[in-house]
Amino acid sequence: MPTADDFRVRQEPFYQPQDKEIELYEAAYAARLPVMLKGPTGCGKSRFVEHMAWKLGKPLITVACNEDMTAADLVGRFLLDAGGTRWQDGPLTLAARLGAICYLDEIVEARQDTLVVIHPLTDHRRTLPLDKKGELVAAHPDFQLVISYNPGYQSLMKDLKQSTKQRFAAFQFDYPDSTLETAIVCSESGIAADLAGRLVELAQVGRRLKGHGLDEGISTRLIVYAARLIGQGTAPADACRMAMVRPITDDPDIIDSLDHAIGAIFG
Ligand SMILES: Nc1ncnc2c1ncn2[C@@H]1O[C@H](COP(=O)(O)OP(=O)(O)OP(=O)(O)O)[C@@H](O)[C@H]1O
Ligand SMILES: [Mg+2]
Image (cartoon, rainbow, N blue to C red; front, side, top):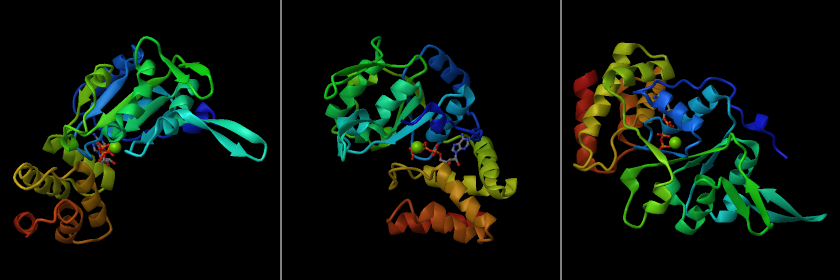
């Protein structure tokens, strides 16, 4: 059986705070409140959880949710092998037993009937019933559940029920202001600050097009991609086209106007 040590975050993941989120998360963890991280793609949600798990010295078990995920994928199942049937804990059960932080990424992708399994773990009960096995797991005192979702992708069909939402304390993330974002890009790529600043400027042009032809702005993640390409010797304009413009849209007019902005910023 895996141990808590298998899931330790050994090296400090670099995280640039935007506000008081580190202190507030520490308070939420101390109170053992389940936490929800909301915000657009590539703005630092996963990095924040990794950083907090490292800072608190707790193991981290991450699950990428998808619509085919069943309750058994989270909780566990009986497996057939040569010796007969054997129970195997799913990641949620394992986290509850080991006292890990369990991070359910993109939670809205999971179906509602799958999600109800987290309910008894996220209220005063702090238990997880394994119906098939006939066991009630009492969560380890260190266990905490963290979920993330991107409200931008939300539709009426894909939203969390209030009875799920109202089990969490929530953090609202967004792309950082340009000074902080420039610092992040420098630290993640090693490129010079003035160049990083120009990439951030381009991202901000893209973000202004959100709702005017773009569903999502250009993420911090994509700025870091462009910066890493530049670090490999790619010309900045090529890096921007490849990492910050082509991935986000197929709309020729938007591509044109962003390419134009690249010309203006790097020309
Ligand atoms: N505050 C930050 N500190 C350090 N790095 C950051 C920060 N914000 C974003 N990044 C950089 O952006 C990248 C993407 O961040 P992350 O993977 O945490 O996004 P996310 O919000 O989890 O996105 P998704 O919803 O798509 O999973 C990170 O790998 C890191 O390079
Ligand atoms: Mg993530």
